[in-house]
Length: 118
Image 1: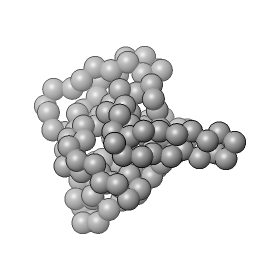
Image 2: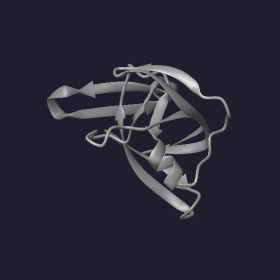
Image 3: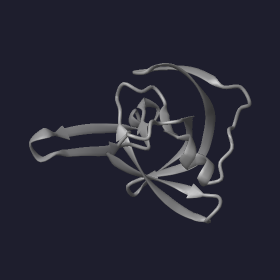
Image 4: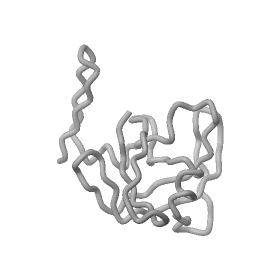
């Protein structure tokens, strides 16, 4: 898990959202409920079709001017909105569209994931 901070258009401050790092996800996906609460609207009218572990889903597409991952600010980030099941422990996933901007080191024995921006 990693904390991503998105600007809340309703509260005018950053909101911290715990997301799962998912190397199997092409695009970062965030809970539709969270994005709605933060005041975001889809950047495109048409919905995209994606394949998840649960099957095919149709999702709204969003474009963020920036997001913060730790102390690193990333710009022009595409994300999808998906309704996650209530029993889900995550509010979304950080996909390869964000992860490819980093070198990643996994330290399993210490339960640490290190991201170094490239």
